[in-house]
Image (cartoon, rainbow, N blue to C red; front, side, top):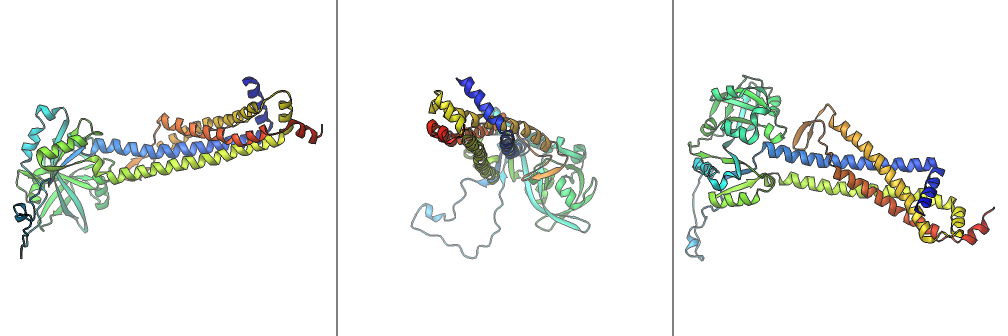
Length: 422
């Protein structure tokens, strides 16, 4: 009986080829758009996480103490007491990690050796860079180049210059490509760096790097010693310590443990990029809503062709019921037609989506996709997304066939044959 229903369904669909083809193409185009859109959003998220994990520190130990000295020291002994301070004008204390070498030595112990891959101290400083008539505020980051390379792979990201030049010259700069473009910097260019205290220092560009992360490419690297001199920090103090861990996707427990051990605030890369990750989550909800909406529109198209088929084939349906076809089988016939239209359109749309995704990936243009800069678009080929959209499309097309099939099942053979001209 299933074979008979299948043959009748094929005849019904082929009997109105133009309308069937239009509906199938409509389902295919909507499926292609949904898969491509979902692939773009998921691909961008996956690319962002992969790039951040490879470039940025997984955990930062910042110079912010977790148990700072209380403002009201009197209240500790007597909760009812209040302390007042008059005419105390004091410079705000900087965030800094003291005795950072002792903390870094802790990571070579057996307890942390299997969890922490690399550690790198850094000093951050907001400075003004001047070259000729151009001047621009930027973030200066002092590093130990070998340790920083273990964190971010800076050697492989150099597009011009050489690390050896950076190591030989104590006043050398590694400049992000974005800053280099904005200030028209080239190798061996002289740049005047002015600190917040007004002191200036002549530096030379030893290399230009490109990581693909916009925040990183808008910074400048110098030696750790030079940054300490600019910030007027003693040799045993830094702004923080960058860590690369074994499991970057599950690092919150390690960060909390390090906070307790070191006494300094430890921030994971997820916390630093929380706003961006939440934005991706909202985009995901929007795409899901788009999937549902376009799927419903496709379902209306399928329902339209089946309603027309019921109207035109009412006499055939009456004859089938006269020959013993039950209402359940009539419903199954039109549900099968909806399933076939949805499946055919969804599969064609899936093939078209592969072509559109490949096209976007290979576009020879550089685009700034949110926090990243990449050549071509970041797309995901994850088959789960293909199966999800195809499955939803087929389900909606099948459900859309229920209404016209119920109408067909209610037809009375005697009334239809009496009113028709034989």
